[in-house]
Length: 230
Ligand SMILES: CC(=O)N[C@H](C=O)[C@@H](O)[C@H](O)[C@H](O)COP(=O)(O)O
Image (tube, rainbow, N blue to C red; front, side, top):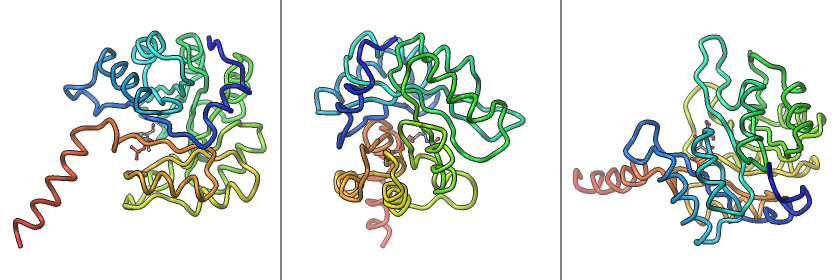
């Protein structure tokens, strides 16, 4: 359970960078020790908070850092496209492992447990809640259920081609409607992260560009190859 109270957690995150330390699944960096080390390095670099997937990774990280942690569990279900913290057991496990904030899939899709039930459980456990949404309607639905942070996390990931740019308009629209917005998804450069804050984001989460080395190296290699092949 977190040592920080809710006001303190929110104050620590305001206009800050959240480093999402989620290595590529089953890659060489996918271990709790490495995730915790990435988290510590991120804090040294100035991250205001962390986003950590998986109970073992969360426990290893919680033991090493004091900044607020957004915890998630990702699952691949046969009967639902929802991946992020879909079960009440996930919520219980994340709270017990020391998450300050628990993020869940806030999209309007077939799911094992309704969003209001997930939110009530997070509250009952004394954690802050974050809804990973894909559009304005989902964000407002979760906002009206009292969710503490509305994330743009799922924008671009619920069907069709994944855009290359982040969904800054969604951040602006949710902010204008009174939400505390977590800009998340494809903020792949310092300039883009700053743009999120300029557009009203409460905080901005960056993952791949900080902690998925395979992706980062691939971006460089692609650019070099494009020039090489000309
Ligand atoms: C859609 C989905 O499942 N997003 C996940 C949520 O935890 C992660 O895979 C992302 O890395 C994270 O949202 C940060 O985004 P980016 O890596 O683009 O900075």
